[in-house]
Image (cartoon, rainbow, N blue to C red; front, side):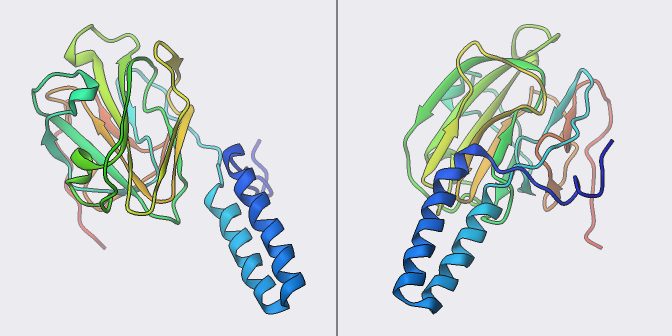
Length: 236
């Protein structure tokens, strides 16, 4: 049972503790040097704690559901050829991209029950991750995922790409070749502001809209067993 306290408490991702410790030590030093500077250190430490928060998520469980891998804002949903690193061929696929600003949760989650077929890292540039060219030119980590209980071939595989942004300089990916995951499990993190692209099977219908807020491990971005038409949205 979830208590009122559980809705307030937020776990911290272990990758953040070194940064929090450094910020705390810096704060102590600043207080010793000059008290007003120490309060700036307190703000910096509090921001580090906030940035590396890692809240629990309630993940929908059903065959065919593809979930968002990141918290953030959905960018334009387009048909795009996957990066060659994914080995998904040159047929355009629906691409759902989520942009993470520095205030979003940056822990990334697996979008479906799957197995990692390919893992490929490519160094690159650091354009603003909200720009479309970031998918082609920026530093990235690519995962090709085979969906559990899905047919072999293009219809049973998706691409997942972590992309570094203008501020981000570090991609962390804990998924290994051949490793199996359940939907919603954590697999990585990007510091500090970034983008995650998901390439759906050909012909799949994305169920999210540009400008919508997505939540990693919770927001359904596609349902491979549904014949629902593309959704439309309006800002209200």
